[in-house]
Image (cartoon, rainbow, N blue to C red; front, top):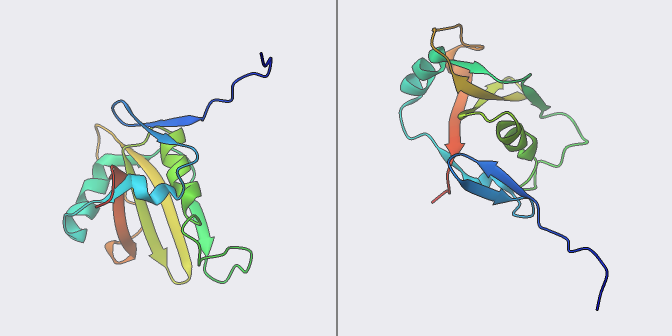
Length: 127
């Protein structure tokens, strides 16, 4: 009889009762694009606020391997850790920024102009 403790696979909760295994990388496969127009996505951001400091990625940073499927995982982990409802990706020159957001009752200011909006995502399996 073994006395070693059982190792449990860690699970990360996302949304209503669904979970993501911490070993199911890359995390982007557990998020889906918002299908509305960029204008509609941008207008929806006015009733959302970020849950933490945004994360930025510099295209010229040689320490980041942009050829992998996991380089954006910090964005998805931030979404999960802050119990966000929306993940927003911005692009300004060579800098990509992501921010996790939640809905608020009062409209606020959006971080960047609509021309910088790449896309928004929510938890859900990609097709």
